[in-house]
Image 1 (cartoon, rainbow, N blue to C red):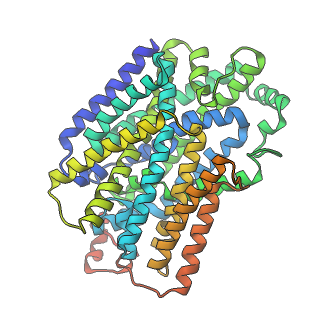
Image 2: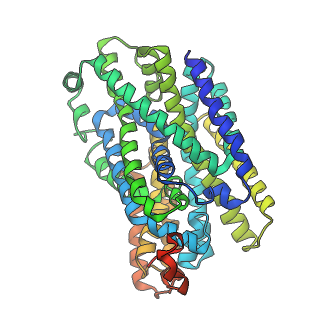
Image 3: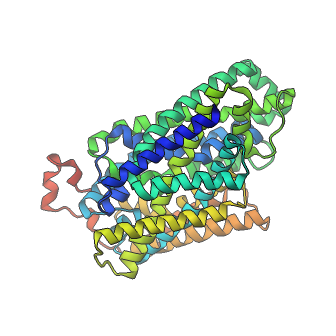
Length: 499
């Protein structure tokens, strides 16, 4: 029964991908869906890609290890959705419509009049996307390994094969529609698991009592010792509240909404549905209690917590639906990352830098986008056969890379006229270098800082942007210039200028 429901779910998203191929006519529809989606579609796309397999599988495993402290990531990420909508949604939608931008590096080149900033941010997006995609693939392999009862590598291959068809074929149209369906499944699955698991452990008071008996730190917002202390708490604020604005798979969804007036509803829907799906993380706490009671065998890896708990304690039909929800989280973010990664190569590096902005035939652009998407799928699949870290830590590191490389130059840059081209280049480059370099040193055990490596890199990047801007010459940017067309903003909100 579990297998049947899983297969039906995978076939449904496969069909959506195949049907969406008919609507892919150019780069705009492939990467932005033609900017024609309403608030529910955009909102659920934002919340589903924010959650991801990193959230459902990785963070559930980290909750199992560290307790309630990991929930701060969910609280901060929910706040981050509000902050991203408040700071970026309207300006990004207006600027990209006015200048025809399809990607974040597109927008940043217009803002700073710099091919260099386009190249750096495109490389940062590509690097972070590969790391995050490895987290998704590892989560996908772990989930299908349990559902199908096959070897991890075979399970990973099956999942990636299905993902390939509907992402390469359908582009952003299939991505947004599958996000919509998948988020509904995710919310339902999270509520079922939360309620069912809470009954199994005897309610919230009993759960907390048993957790505190094992280790008082498990019921604290941050620990007195270990890696989840006060500095981790501070780091999560930087990475998930402020850093949410730099997540390209999420904020690129702002390009797609049909009308600016719809954004306020999309914000509320996105934050609310994300908060509901985070209830699945209680599985980590339930598993801790069940293992301690002797009612469940301890998982071999924290990444197997969610699959094992669901398989052990839920009827096959319910378990099948929940497994579909978890696969939904993984698939939705995988498709988003594959699209932003391929756009970084095709549009931002190949077309705009190598070809110097030369206009390519639309069919050639679309074909290149699909081929490079396929190449990234193959590369990340090979890397995911033997990933270097747990899903949770891989995802956290990638969030840090995006936050450090993109947040200052994007969020500060479109709000502060004084930010200069030289400062943006240094800021993004230093954020990218430090976020990757410090993470490698941490994994190797060479240097393990108190603050998260991504938070440190983002602080360096922000200070660089502000400091260098103040000592370099101010430069005008077209995004702050008004034109006669801007006067029509009331009639056509999509054409409004950001001021």
